[in-house]
Image 1 (cartoon, helix red, strand yellow):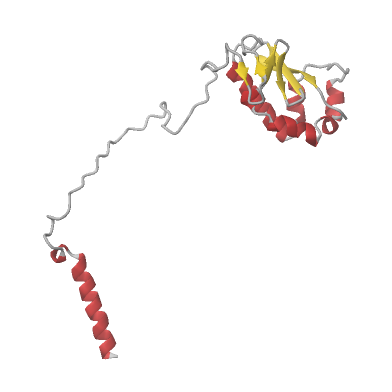
Image 2: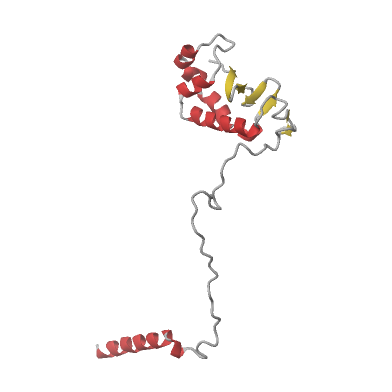
Length: 183
């Protein structure tokens, strides 16, 4: 037992000695002094931090005034030629619409539609038949649509591979004027 205590005491003393500067050869001469180059910045809540990317619909869209070629070789009109003053705002509108579709916000979607639709569908008919209009396949097409690849022509902006939804500018916002669904 005394032998184990002596060994432990030896290791403790050795470890303590090796951690001090006295045990290092050329103490202080074999290492480089490092002084941190820290600049203290004062927090200003009016200035966003570097990782914060504000979404601006004021910046011009890359395709605002020129046609856009999609990966499937479809050429879409420029946002301006299609009647949209701000392409980024239209993209943001569609992204919000996708969220409304995802969470089945019937009333919000109904308020974005210009009634009656061509098949004489009124707002009350739409709300009553929402689940059959926005069935799983229909919603999947609209949710998988890349908002940055919305097809545009003189009629408006199309979402979905088969033109499931069309919208266009009306006043300061956008209105859905066509839904191509099958019950």
